[in-house]
Structures are given as C-alpha cells and as structure tokens.
Length: 215
Ligand code: ZN
Image: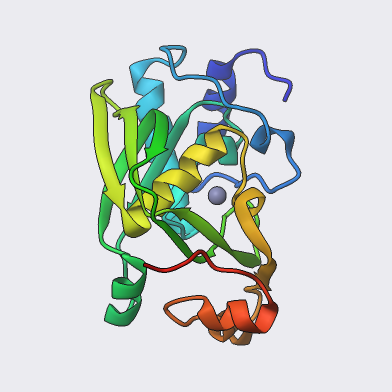
C-alpha cells in the first residue's frame, strides 16, 4: 500500500467519521505478517485507532477485528462478544461473555490437547462460514492498550476469538485452518438456518468432513 508513513496512513483513515471500510480476502495486507506495535503511533493516535476499530467491529457486527482488516499492518486487534445466543448454543460452544479487550502484539499457545470444532466466519470473507477445529484453551501473551503485560488463559468461544484475531496478524485466514468441505453460504436466512445447530455434527455427516474426536 503506497503511503508515506504509517502515521499519515492512520490519520487519513481516521479523518472520516464512523465505521472504517473492511478489507476483503484477496488484499495482500491480509496475507503479510503485521509489524509489532512499538511506538510508531503516538498514544493519542493509537487510542483513536482503537476507538475506530471498536466502532467498526460493532457496526459490522463482529466479535473481533484485527488492524490488517482495516488496512493497517500492525499487530493490534480488538475483541468483544456480548454472547447473545441461546443457552443451548452457549453451553455447546462455550460462548461466554467476552468484555471489550485490546490485544497489542499478541501471541497464543495451546493449553492441553483438546480441540473444539464449530462454524465460524470472518468479516473479511463475507457471505461464508466454515468449520474450524481450534484449541479449546489457549494461553495469550500480549500487551494491553496501556502497554501493560497480559498473560492469561482463554477457554471456549473467547479462546476461538483470540486465535482467529491473532492468526490475522500472522497473515493467516480462518479458511487456511477450515474443513473446506464445510464451507457454507450465509447469504440467505435459509442458508444461515441450515447449520445453526449448536454443534456441526449434522453438517459433518451431510457435507462429508471429519470432526476431531470428542472426549
Ligand atoms: Zn477474521
């Protein structure tokens, strides 16, 4: 992307009010490892960027947004999930409330060997969802928006969000990890309803893909 400096690029992005445009798959910015946040943006500009990312995530709506998804090649992401789902879905997927968090320079590692496979989607791949088997629990190491060290474990759906967003910062899309035969349209209410069950077992049978063993 031709810009004179990251500061100027972010300033120009933030010149417009409201949600930022989301970059779609096919843009190389989503495929390059993002650079660490290391003071290249002033504290004020970083705070404005984070606020704009939060507005953009809410508007989409989504439960996470990584800076490359708005064309900013920095290791920065926001996550937040009100988990407005049925009790059945909440229990099956471990989809619990995730308060707003800022992840600066995050990295994760698996805790234990359990994996969980569910449909997920991505704001940069609109109109589709696919099943991804991910670590059920991860240890996140990062900084928060004030530069304080974070070392924390996440489980269930919040762990999925942390993995999805951190993967973006490494140039990885969820489709790289997906069961590709599970790929399904979300472009009509009927299509969304088809695989809205709490778990993807029926989708696995009918579409012909494997799920990790359940324990
Ligand atoms: Zn995504």
